[in-house]
Length: 288
Image (cartoon, rainbow, N blue to C red; front, side, top):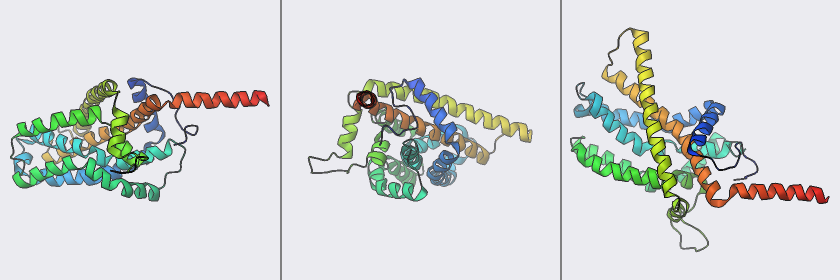
């Protein structure tokens, strides 16, 4: 990353400043960003429909509201790291004045895919295995007990594993003392900032939940206005809910990327480095 060639100002920001900056980034790159989010999201949206729609316990009309929403939310939360990988690679290139190309993004994604599956994909594989052996008849309480502490640790204290895997490209393990592995890099980056990381996690949780509810309400209202019928069929409900959740996931991929940059700015002194470069350039001109 070339710190003197960025599309955003390198400086420390508060949580709300990062949310505002994320909106500006989305507005500036809405077309390409939408396409790369869609590339990552579409396979998982189809997978979710196949897994849940084929399960009569979940897809019965009387069960659809709460049960379907809960299981879909579980799947989407575990799929987020894999689904947002293409968008993260795009942001890592375009915000540092590089020219993102499809071939380069897919090549970088292919190189990082083994680590993504090993470090980020195993919880999703475990949940899908539960669906396969029990068809979601397992008690929801056990899933809650497994999901809640895991999600709090993963997104509250280790939120930037995706960015480390995709953008820094350290080896999964190494015996070379001169190199650092991905787990060690994650521990080094996230340590000593856990209070701030958890505060941003809670802010994202509240804001993201509210945004998802608003999008669902807007979609429902638009459907009612266009058709004159406020009732939702199971298929329409599933489509609107998935679209709303994935839209929120796409936006928070941008937020998470900017929070990752902000953490590195704070931990690695990027802002100080740029100020020293600027001062050195000014002094050299005065000497000349």
